[in-house]
Image 1: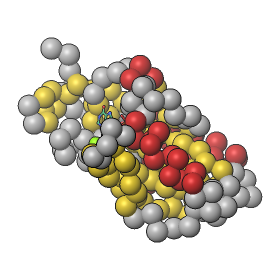
Image 2 (image 1 turned 180 degrees about the vertical axis):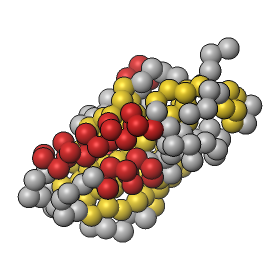
Image 3 (image 1 turned 90 degrees about the vertical axis):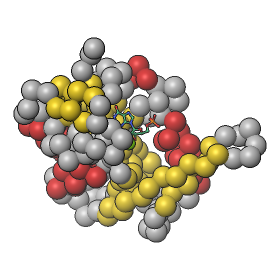
Image 4 (image 1 turned 45 degrees about the horizontal axis):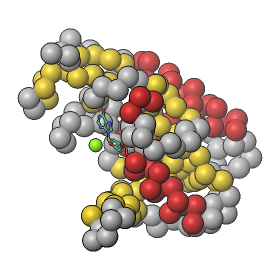
Length: 180
Ligand code: IMP
Ligand code: MG
């Protein structure tokens, strides 16, 4: 792991190693394997950030299960109701399925708090959320987090799928923004 890396104009320092991440992801996968024994859950991974987490977790899932990938788009409304979150690519039936949402990071909770009602509307049998990272201090919209690998401080991070202005997703570990 490099000591410091520069992405665009910012310097980042090592925070979580690839080994730490992979072992935490495996533990969550094993918990899901036991919680959903004899069930056939549908994983819904939210792009772009969750692709690496989803791939690593899914390798350790021993259940008969489905996975699909969606993108969320938000639009500025003309009314004061603000943003509407729309799922792009949710082409799989959710009704009567055990759904597990896969997210890279739960930050303010805004995205998920607006998206979850859309999924609930489609009447899944159950709905749970798994996030690689969670910034509890940043939470504005409470979202029930059922599975989480790491709680982290409210500092910007990159790597393992997470980006800073489009770059850094390919880094196999997690780096944190360096303090000035
Ligand atoms: P929310 O604030 O919980 O709605 O977070 C929405 C999205 O912001 C996450 O899925 C990430 O893609 C992105 N995000 C939040 N915090 C960070 C960070 O520290 N680094 C990179 N992306 C982040
Ligand atoms: Mg992002």
